[in-house]
Image (cartoon, rainbow, N blue to C red; front, top):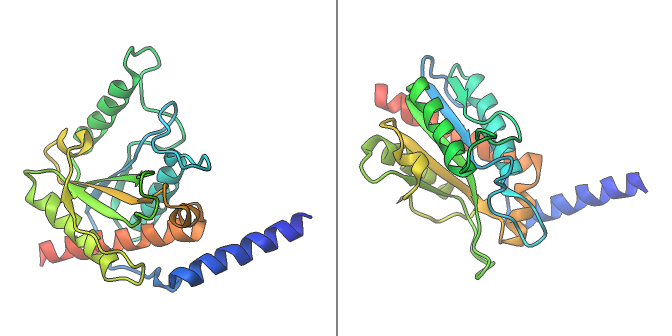
Length: 227
């Protein structure tokens, strides 16, 4: 029975990938950029599950999986990486009256101490009212030109891929983007309210693909800034 289940899952994933014409061979070696420092923020965690799909998939776990893959991608290319959240737990003080506020304040402190070249926050989106809505989108703070530069670079990387994503980087009113003076980008990696995209987001292969493409966009953009 277990062998049948594994075979079924493999066939099912292959069918989904084929349907969307996704080429996982895109996971390539991006250029190395030594001395560049990135803070990776895996959104939500612990008591705060974030968005939840109709089938019960929680955003927080997928955020962390993508963030850890991105950490590996960047470290392998000489990038200095700091993670705000390293496990499934929240950063909130357990005695805090407002745990969400405490959690976000701890993230701010980590970013401030790191003083990075870039902060990138990983999230998932949801729009249950229209389940057909899908696709990765990047956001930046309203006053940061460097933030906009990196957000547009990441968005363009996905728009020009075979993932059938056609979105624009946009200004986002998010605390994590505005709480420090450092260049900051928030990436909504897809919609849990879209059943097909939800299935992809739950796979290790797609999580690695997202991380690889985000890393390549960051490294190519940082290298251009220093040229």
